[in-house]
Length: 250
Length: 250
DNA sequence: GCCATCAGGATTATCGATAATCTCTTTGAA
DNA sequence: TTCAAAGAGATTATCGATAATCCTGATGGC
Image 1 (tube, rainbow over the protein chains, first blue to last red):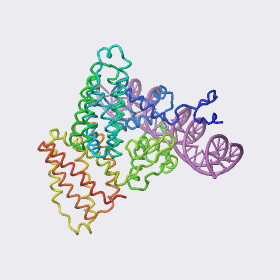
Image 2 (spheres, protein in one colour):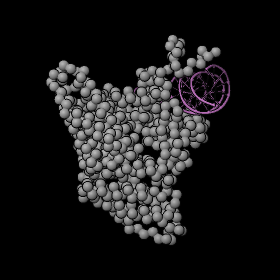
Image 3 (cartoon, chains in turn cyan, green, purple, orange):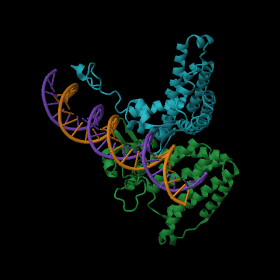
Image 4 (cartoon, helix red, strand yellow):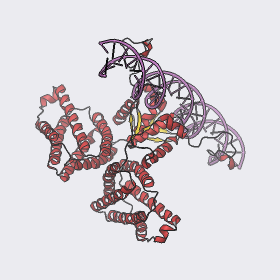
């Protein structure tokens, strides 16, 4: 009886294609354009022509326009009335600028997180960071076992995301949390695109470094020392920028 | 032949209305909705129905949708896929939250402005603040001469805007400048709507207080003391919130 | 030659209509 | 009764077409 319960599923041999992403088009387009801009496939100053994009994505103009408005809100595209959208420059200088904003907000968040954080959760994060910080990755792994390496990088990224998300949540400030998540969109795009392709020894080094930095931050939060938390967070973010500097134009 | 060529100029008694705001509709709608939300005419949790708004503004659905996307980016409206837009809560608690974000960013900006500011410009601002801080407004003005009072309030607001804009520009960080200007949209809406109606003695007091705070900040920038600049800016913003607290629900 | 004006084509902004999805109520069987 | 399923109405998301605006290059008067 329940076999027919499938709601949104096309029910196998259905005749009418139910259109896979109704209501998700804008978001999908935003993500793709964002990635391409950060990767440099779309150059600074380039015009984003609506009809061209509509053809490329196989959709009509409306979702494209809305995606462009969203990108303008994110601050990565400029829209001039009756003249259309152009890609803003995202070179190292801009990444630095955005990082400064992130720095200010992450520090504000981590200060507030002191005293509000869930300590048992924090404790388990600390253990993860310790494990990751002490993990040795051999030259052998680096060259031969790219699958394991890939996995390590992946899990490091996930842990990083989770940690920063938690801090934002613990800040107890929903608006701040929102702003940080908006910035994270940008940073994730940088991270995954700008330097994600080369799995160098340097990257592995950075992962253990990051784990150590995360550890410091987590411990500061645990001890309720908000000044120290902000200080370590600040260092963490500045180190990140310094590291990325290599994979970016200019 | 050319009679139909009429381009942008209505040519006096033209028969065809040339549509006044092509390319400006979205922005206009954003502004109006923003004001209404802050004023409480649109309540928290209320659904913003596209067709309803389209009728009200006398436009089609497209500009409305784009305006809603913009408002989502500003963080004052939530859009759920296939379910539409609802107004986020903006009570005192939320104003506090937003203010914390603003605090972090304004302080970052003012720190960076130290050493980058245009000193002659700064000097002239300082004179304006001094004049405003020492200005006495009599009881008589307060009651009888509402026109003059109005003008004083107006010019105080303009000076405030100008000062904060300049600091953002002096920060030398365009992204930061953008973020601040986005937040300013919100704050201006609060200021002009939430407590703008009552021109009380209290408001006049606040104006001279603000002038004094601005003065402190400007002098700190002038002397290049970034720590002091951040400290005074922080106080300034927190005082502002404290003052607004009266005109807001909850 | 220099400047203002104006077609012509390209592109954006807006519109009105259609398709997809949600919400709520009703129905009928276990 | 309780639950799943179906249907009606409302609303959103998307589409394709039209109107408005911009850009470029040519034209013609001075």
